[in-house]
Image 1 (cartoon, rainbow, N blue to C red):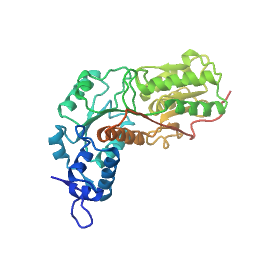
Image 2 (cartoon, rainbow, N blue to C red):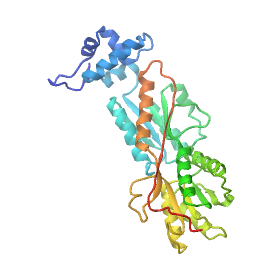
Image 3 (tube, helix red, strand yellow):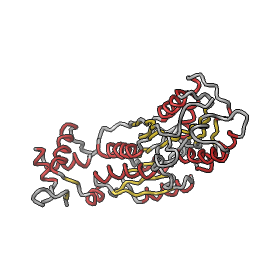
Image 4 (cartoon, one colour):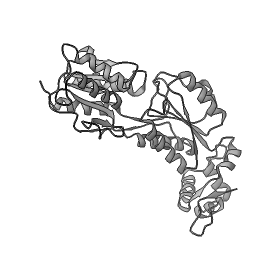
Length: 348
């Protein structure tokens, strides 16, 4: 039972149409599109068949395929916290690419709970998903043994695991931190505080390490207490951390927050201290979540291309599912500093 998108005459292309367009036998076209491991097709022929299928708009019948492979036409996506503003663009990007390849997406939210993560992962595997995209937040959490045994292709999205070589689509956090620091240094700031997201997260650890390395490389001797990394990453966490620093003997003239929520909390702490942003304290956020250009003052922040990260993660998984000689590889995207009104020259 073949199906696909309807052509100009309203008739859906069939596998036989693909074989005819590629100039190969029907069985060869079938093996090429199903990525047969027992009778693999010559890579050049397989590429010819896939190109022909794309040109005529053929989409394989995923239900029929699932009966042959014992896998459902679905991809499981494990996310740590859907309320986190960075998650919607990530999953939208991934879902868009997966849908283009005929896959349904099954989402499972773990609420950053390791036990829930293990349970949700087992649930997705029990549904015999064709592949998995994991946005697990914890950098030191090993993949479940049942996942390794299942041999289901896995890609990490916006996360890396320290000890496990798994394909991933991530952001070069060191570039974003360097851009933010160089911007503040260029404005004359020397006492720059860093309020980081938890170090048990992949992004949190990389951003913290980048702040440490860049300040050293630029010759800034930051007081140890100006680097604050806790267990939270909310507005309240940012407000409380900066309030303590502003009440100290050597308050910072600028703050680099580990995410935009903490940066907005810094606004509240600055107001409570009877100061203004950016005249007294400049603030830089991270992520460029929606509406950060509408707050007062509009937030200078590091824009992370989360939608593209999601697309890249899904693309890596599709590659693992369809390319016979696919090698495990990872993709790192580059963030970009967006300068708005929350930063200005140092007051002292």
